[in-house]
Image (tube, rainbow, N blue to C red; front, side, top):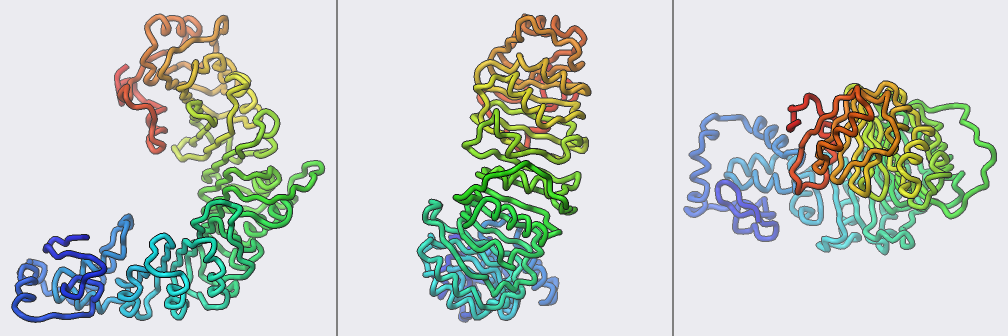
Length: 500
């Protein structure tokens, strides 16, 4: 139930007696109706004599981008007054969000306006068969199509094979059944492969041939939990074909793509040609099972200097021997100025920013706790040198902090000016290891158990360093939100965000 400012109740299934119902075309008269709208007619906005077409434009822009239930907007507008309802009903673009709730009431009023179609199987208001039979006649008006179906309903998507969708810009299809053994398969080209305006495509647990012409001229592509028939080499070449067919890609997200056949690999060789994606903003490889796929993509794409690269190693990989195999190279490492290393969770995470605080790297390189902090850090920096790091932050909430790897870090980051250590336990510097040549500033962030004796010991190891403590959160808080990490971990002046 949604209540407007005028006190009118809004509920989808009971609008026949109210101006604000899904029976939106109904009108009413009489003293009771006049009394209901009297406060609205006396409102100052009705004295301005705003033309109806201006009101229509205002109504079209009235829905916030982050409004969860956008389909409620036209209902709320139509409930304000009789004149607003009349204008709303004559504004087709207000009624374009079609789902199982709004199908009967909205579709007739949308007329020829571009449509946003959504179906979610768990709402259980209407079967997928019935829903598609009612919306496919206007498929050439679809601007956006979002379908979440059950695996058993997947054959019904064959209704989309030969219908026109020349205005479709965004397509999202997913299955509610996440178990990959039940993964739905579509051996067909949606819309006969002809979607000239399609720019955003997301497939989740739905198998569509990667050779389909629908993978063309995309700006955003997200593929998740998809089994591909053939070998890992076939998968690699199909993905490269898609990349070459989408030179204006801005977002490429690939998660858990796999096949059951891996081809024996010969000597590694970089591709002769590299595809430049000048507009790429975010590139994500997450839990890809086959190193051939990750390696070929990283070596075949030429990344712009502002691209954010997100790499997540597969669960089963061996850090010591296979990390370099999965991610042979990472672009733009020389542009990273600030680096954050997180040792607080099961998987190790690194994040890096450039000099303008643009995040360029997120890397989850798997569990390497058994190696020890020093050896782990040495292997990472040998594989992925970042020579221009000036600021480093280390966060550790498990066991002892990585004091034994500070010397390794300093020897690899010759330009380092400031190190921040976030730790909620005791800090034990490595015995007998000098930190000479280290950074001029060491900041201990929220190291609540570090006493003066530890500070004295740290200063004796690196007499030239300025060591300070900064408190940035209450003792009850244990984690830092991702959106706050950069400013939290790289403090400016001593008293900028806390106390020294």
